[in-house]
Every structure is written in C-alpha cells, then in structure tokens.
Image (tube, rainbow, N blue to C red; front, top):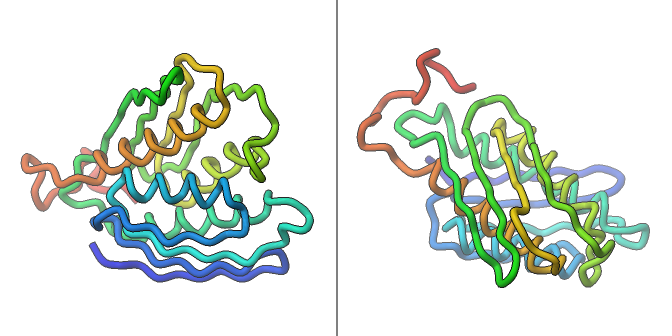
Length: 196
C-alpha cells in the first residue's frame, strides 16, 4: 500500500491531497472551514492515517462545495491506496462514546460505494460548518472509495459531540477494515475473487 497523491480542480474548488493509510495519524488540513479542518484532523488521528489536504474553495458562498469535493478526492485516494484489497480484514465496526453521544460506524470494503446514515442533528451549524454538509461528505467519500459505510446515532443531543463521534467512529471502523488479516494473507477477502 503506497502513499497516494491526488489533486482536483473545478470552478468551485482547488484541492491537493496526500494520503498514507498506514501512517501515524498525522494530519495537516487547511480547507478554509475551521470545524471541518478539526473533523478531518480527528479522522486522520483516530484512523492512523497520514493526511495532508489543502483546499481553496468558494467559501464566500458557503462550505458545501469545499466539503463535498474534499470527500470526493479523499474517497478516490482511499480507493487507490487499497489497491485490490488483498490480505485485508475487509470489515470493521465500532460504537464510539463521545460524552453523551454514542455513535455506531460500520465499514465494508465492498467495492460498492454507499453511505447509509442516521445522524439527526438539532443545530444547523457547528462553528462555520453547515451540519447538512456532513451527509454530503460521507456520501461522496463512500461512493468514491467504493466502501459501504453505515453511521448511526444511538443516543446523544449535542451536535458537536455527535459529529465528532461520527468522524472518529468512521475512522476507527475504516482502520479496522484496512488492517491485515493473518488468516487471509495474500488473498482477496471475497468468494467472488474481487472487491473492485
């Protein structure tokens, strides 16, 4: 598994990204949306991913394009880094407590990108972050990474805690799915023979 470097430029965003999925959890994030930077920093730290990501986006409109486009490129980077998924565990899940919030995340490196979430949020904003954008991020990320991602709020009220729990739980579940499976060394973890 290699370090992946990608970039993406549209009329709305200009993004550069470098990712190592087996890193030390080092994140250097700058998107122009402070709360989003904080969430991606947590995602890198709790997943053990080394992530360098910079985005210049049309945040004078709002943060939507920045968040969604970062999700697209981050998903593509994970897909490339996973290669054919040979020898990987494939599945990971975690129920993560974040103060009063309890968030469940489950991941399958299925090759069939889909996000299935239930994260009711009572506040429309967390700092400078439009909380609706979290769903757009997870949708774009799961689709482009080719993973099945479930995130569910089991209990909780505080929007910041719920979102923080979601990012941390997703990172840890993904890290578990990406871990080498000693029982499947050298094999693709599917009876079909492919997870692409």
